[in-house]
Image (cartoon, rainbow, N blue to C red; front, side, top):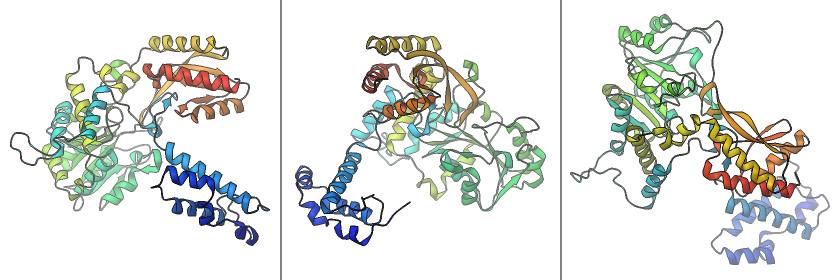
Length: 471
């Protein structure tokens, strides 16, 4: 609760000029002469005046100066070193949205670096020297990968869905099952996106049961029948779901387009590798759908993007929408997507080239070997409460709703739940944060999301934190 300071305290707050004249601020100003010091200090002083920065009731001018200086130092440190920084992900969530989703391999990193460091042939045809489209570098690759006539790439899958809904309305409408109006992370709700993009969104069926006849009863020529993959939840029991093949038949009879929003979108056959039952994009295309939409930074294992693959006439309609420029991708995303698509097409073993695929299909014995080596290091410095335990990893990213991937974790036994939480916090507040999972009195570091080249950094972080804390 905000508590507004009283009149006496307000009078005691030093002015901006007084603060600028202090030794501490004078030293900071000399070190960083271009920094907007007046604006910076005024904001902190205003926070104190408005009760957002606590001040002792009987504080005098000197005490308040010290308090403001300390607050300024904390804010400066956050500006210098806070925000985006590399972390060690020991949570076991492979496509962790809060930690940046899919990491990419060396080839994609080099491609991104080259795109950032210099000029690239983003929108130029090298043969003619004339201007081209930036999608030309990646869209043919994805069309070939998915077995479609055409492809289009935008900046994320939400944009892809929005573009689909907006390009066919008016006069068309979007028809979707009530059981597929999903919400995913960050309070993103599909029905809100569709209603904003389209003139009319028609909900059919019920939460648990939707039949092909429900779509056919309301479908008209020019409509878009949208199927949404329930990637982050499942409905069991008294339930029925219209298959994409059935929906395609309805579309043919009613002269309506059929779009399948796959969300994560797998180009790799995970089921064939013994992991889950995620539908493969190429097999969905074989049903005759007009288009499939999916993300680039999830199961594909590339940069953030929305990828739309399907029939040429359908994709051409999307490309005529003026919004395509609003949702286009930048040169770094083009470079990464192009590289990863080529790895799928040409790599002798794509699971070794694309990190996400390697993480999901990893051999547990390899994780056990690494975990035991890490325990040896920790016990060599006197840490006895560390052991190796079987664990599960989650794919995350709104995919593999109920599939758990066998994994291995380092477990650090603590005296209490509170001690475990405190240790996890200390690891998270390191210069290179280490994210873990707390399970009762244990802190767990899952190795499915720690890369082998990060083992040394992880060992150093654990040794330093555990020996300092006396755990």
